[in-house]
Each structure stands twice: as structure tokens, then as C-alpha cells.
Image 1: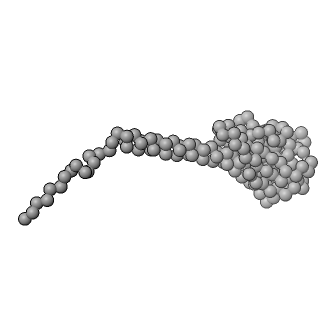
Image 2: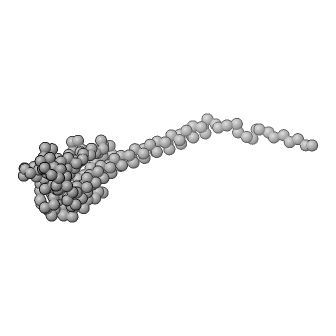
Image 3: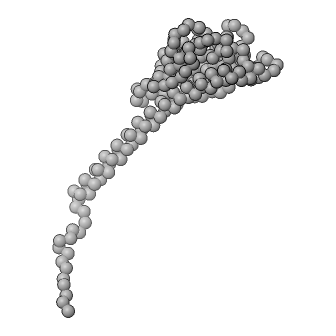
Length: 191
């Protein structure tokens, strides 16, 4: 019987200090890249969420107007379709979306949100880091889908400027997204 002796001299005992430092540095760099990409995606999602909230509110109020949906307005005894339609008010301080039924009988509040006469349907607060840029001349902005008008009424204005643009800006990344509303067709989109 023959005995073979194996020497441990050719097998390394562990990692060297330099190998350990390089491994830790690679791990730190990869971790930093993941965190940066996560934050960037989170900011992008906040901006997209704000645009989708505005677009959803506009589409919902347009659908309610076109379908003739009935509501119980504060000054009316029976549920009926609001005389002037449904609308959205957008304020920039704080960035807020108010969906309402335009129930006002007073011509001075026609096609604008009036808390005493109109019916508040829902309120949506935009994400904290998202601000509304002044892309419409006045604030708050009132966008109303009236059953008696061929165009979407913006700030009680009947002019036929074809596209209304509402620009949202993220305060940390300075990225912008624009919600567009075609006043002639009522089509909404964002880019």
C-alpha cells in the first residue's frame, strides 16, 4: 500500500486584504447605482401620477356630462343632470384637483366651482413634489364640460383655442409633463 501526501502549500488560505477591498468597493458602487435609479423612477412615477390624476378627472367629468348623469344639487329639490354640466377646478397652491357638478343658477358663478351652490364630487391632492406651472392664464383653472356648448369651456371662456395645456413640473428633477385637452373634441392626453 502506497501513501500519497498532499501538500497545502499551493492552496490559498483565504482572501487577501486587497481582494476584500476591491469586492467591497464593487458592492458599494452597485448599491449606489441601484439607489439612484430607484429615486429617479420614484420621481418619474410621482410626475406621471399627477398627470394621470388630472387626465382621469377630466375624462370622468366629460363622461358624466355626456351621459346626462343625475345628481342631487344643493339648491334643487330632485336629482337631475346639472344644468351647466360637470367640471374640474385645478389650483396650483396647493396643487389640487376638484371635480364638481356645476349646479349654480347664478350667472356670475357659471362654469366655475362655487362651494355653496355646486356639488363637490371628489378632491384629489397631487403628489408633494409635483407643481402646476402657469400654462392657463388664471388660477384656479375651471374646465367645464357643458351639455349646451360645442367646445370645452375653460375659465368661462368660449373661445376656440384648440388645445389647453397644463404643465406639471417635478421640484426635485425639474422634469415636466404636459396634459393636453383638445377643446373641440374633448380628447385628453399627456406627454
